[in-house]
Image (cartoon, rainbow, N blue to C red; front, top):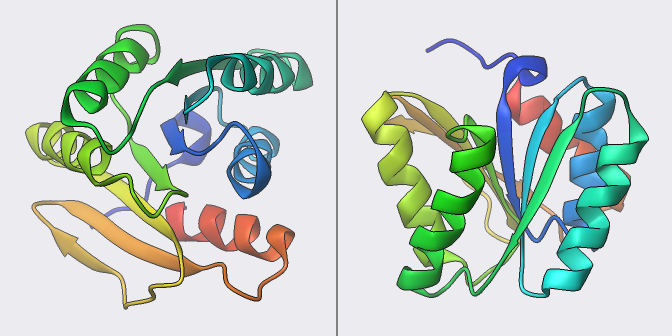
Length: 158
């Protein structure tokens, strides 16, 4: 399986509106990624985070969609909203433990295209594997420095 060029990738980040998720988004901006979708619970916080990314570098398209990533109806809407403006996700970063519905929707979209990378950030850690052309990997965040976690996520995607 080939690696993804993060500079040419569309990246969606669940929890990208604050904390480790926003730090991960900022690492992607520094790596040259120009299309970043943030999935947030709070619309105002998500919009503020997207504006921060948008103004941080030339050529960045950063948008936010808000809703419950655990809800199937919200998941489909969130994915549709971001994909309509940014394109389908090449990379999906999950920083929420309860985001199963949006993760499932993104995996279905990636399967249709036959490629993508999913990175789950949290306490679970398993070796990376491929399923239906999609690379699935994990980054442990517990007891790790936030910058080290963000760097590890970016490395798993390249």
